[in-house]
Image (cartoon, rainbow over all chains, first blue to last red):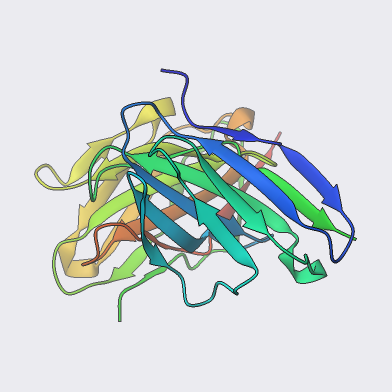
Length: 113
Length: 113
């Protein structure tokens, strides 16, 4: 068990470009979560998967954001037409069952210029 | 409404001194409560959790927390801090939904030599 991993760790992009992040959860965990965190704030929920099914998506999430978990293992988060306001740390977490501990990856820090 | 409040944005403590970080919650039933720690540029690491049972919970790195239903609090304590404890600390709870953690805004711990 190597924990939750995320790639890349850092991403710098120009406004208007598309970016994609990857999250590999702990292997036996079927629940996967994406959060966004800005400086001085707690994590903000983005979306949640149970196996390959995306069960919930935050109403704060614009249509430019999409997430997939095609085989119930790793997940990708894509941001289209990035804006400067998308600059943040994007965190992935996984858990074994509902209301059990969520284990976090190291995050992907995005900077949109 | 369900919420988590961490009243202190920053706390400065001398190395070797004791520490208490405050967390208050608003929730109708007994919540599942967590404390996470985040070092600069890193993901979130679980320190401890309370689900039920003994209200004094022991965690990693010498931390403990006490659940007090009458005060709606879950304060984090450590008898003697080390310089390596400098980080940001987040309190969180699971409300009725089974996936979306509700987070406090965090408390940044600064250690004076």
